[in-house]
Length: 200
Image (cartoon, rainbow, N blue to C red; front, side, top):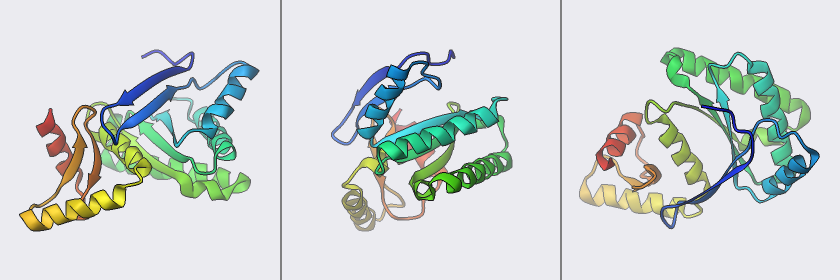
């Protein structure tokens, strides 16, 4: 897949809960005007998703860009949620995934502590791949951070599980295959994968 060279805007409006405006922004903008536009865009953003290719050889450059982007986003909007997707994780074993995520998070957090340690609490890290359900799960968790009614939805799903003697409940957006909420019982990735496969 070719690198993004200009800003692309995508509208996602599958349901009342999934109303997103996604901006695909290149890693290098190239002009002062584009940089200024990015700052104004970040002021109105609810979440920023930064994707790092785990198979890339330019890890140091990507981490430097990640740190700069996080600080820029947080300076423009202190309420922004920052999601780091460590992508193409299918190339790694489960142990390597955990190590890679832990190492990346530690390096970024250490660098951010020097500049602005308040932003660290706004960041989540997730390993993703297009060859399994992890990318849908990661986007689901992003959407959940943005749904203000999440607590009420979780309570309703808890009631449903208790009254119907169910093992687990998910509230899915069928079109996007994102789950908007789940009950409060322990979560296992296999549960999500099974439900996701069933709605296909």
